[in-house]
Length: 283
Image 1 (tube, helix red, strand yellow):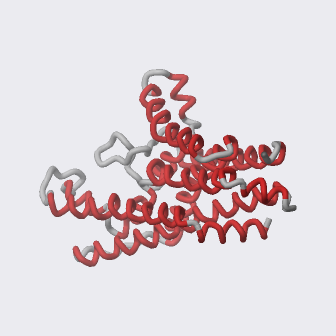
Image 2: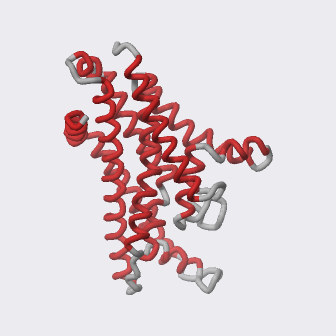
Image 3: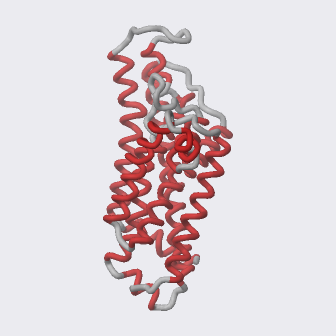
């Protein structure tokens, strides 16, 4: 497995598409987490006061160091999650399109070793991107606080670690979902289409009907997107539907349940992917 893991990391470094997705990821977190709030703060210096703060002050607060954790992971349940899913799809499905999977499995490495190395490399890549997100966002938060002469009140080390681990669970689940779909269909296009339709459309529609149909409400509490959004909400991200709320974030379940469900999804999707490759013909 170690050799497969090392080989996958080498391939990831050499594939331009992963660097492109990572770059888009960082640009998105900066624009939605810091550029837009900063512009809104200066474009709306007044406004109704809520909780002792004007609307502009509340917006700026999200871009300051004390809100680093919530600002960094606010896009993970939906937008960054979609990018993570694409990474998983491309990492697993691309090998079938180029016939390199068949070549690898007929040259000697055990199937479980190859797939385990791929999954481990995928999760390592997600952790790297999450840490990079916190570094980039932390730099942006420091810059905003310095320019506006605001206090440099950083989250505690424990809060940062909790945020990184939670963010990793969220995007790791979406990446593993993409990996699972690409492994099942042995390709990229269909897997990406199915995954994105589920994440961006189906779950949102189910949440709408959950308000009026009790069985759907119970069912959607175990959906991957719902639990990803609930884990983000548990770390302070404003839920969708509230003023300044973030799409995909919900309080339907507790943060503890959300974390457990995400771990279960990662384990199940990974196990099914391993089983499928082990039992199927490589062609």
